[in-house]
Length: 416
Ligand SMILES: Cc1cc2nc3c(=O)[nH]c(=O)nc-3n(C[C@H](O)[C@H](O)[C@H](O)COP(=O)(O)OP(=O)(O)OC[C@H]3O[C@@H](n4cnc5c(N)ncnc54)[C@H](O)[C@@H]3O)c2cc1C
Image 1: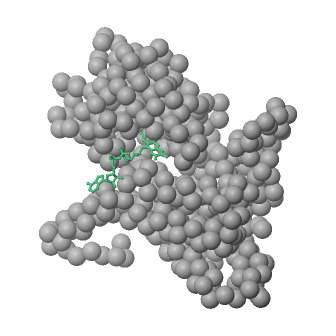
Image 2: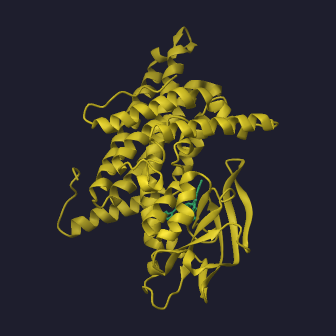
Image 3: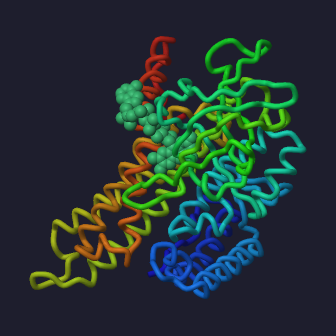
């Protein structure tokens, strides 16, 4: 089944053109090749030839994406991206996320995309040249190393990893885990506690992000943590007297907490954009099966239980995408979108879970096999309720923002 994307009457031609071009690549180049592109990762005994073919295919698709002017939608032209605004990107991403793994073929894959944004905002010209350009060209990989096993990730101010100045170097010591892409990464952006006597004194001000090349002595990758029964690239890392030049610091000493908030805020919206595309796919798969599967004397779609599934999933998807677009509009306008981001980060992964759950149910046993992308989506949707801040923390934030407005004499304006 291909994705059905038509022009949206209220959108400018430019965005419609981007969506149509993206859908063309998804439908013609990626969906028919999904098995060849990624399946080898999950199977034993795949030949080197198959791996080489998959690599070649991925490079060919990337070349087509670049030729169509769709590479790295989150980055400006001068850094190799196609320079879309946040809102334009949201409209494009719901299309590209329809295909499994398409994000990496369009050069906008986490955690690299978040790190690129941070390098763009906080990096010096020299840092951008050294780290951002190769990241965008795809010749380097990166990871973001903040969460620690012994401290609550929900409260990032509790981190204990330290960076101490010794002459022209930072010396880093600490224990991290869930550093996604940590195994493949050429460099890590490490969140450290720095005590700069001249820096801001409050707790947030004591955080600094530092670029650490993975090959630096003292960077010990302990393991790729097993997630959902499979070894993953979410790495556990011990930093043992890791020395890097002081110039590897990102931004001002003490700017790390703010940089993490900037990174995670946009990242949460990206995750939701991806979830909308994946829900769209799960929905199409469910509808396709409901139309063709004969049970108890008729097609599934004639059974009212299944009609309820179709209607509920339609509502879940449309609600999620309108919330995502509204949030992207807020961010683009420069408004404070923290409440919208938290609301989205809670609602969309839950809706995504429900939509995939129904699709699995309709497919029966086939729904949980590796023959369909649904099982992977199900795990991804559940995981999203933890990554980038668990639901509870976001609920607290929404309530605090609403009450703050109320106590300052205003009620909530849902139009803005
Ligand atoms: C797949 C995956 C990828 C990840 N990738 C990265 C990465 O690349 N880099 C990185 O640094 N981190 C990464 N993380 C870590 C992630 O950001 C943290 O797991 C998350 O912030 C939660 O932190 P924690 O696991 O320490 O849970 P904790 O902080 O221990 O919280 C546990 C639970 O307590 C509850 N809770 C927390 N606070 C409150 C409260 N105030 N009131 C009520 N209940 C509360 C919540 O239910 C929460 O789930 C990743 C995690 C996953 C699962």
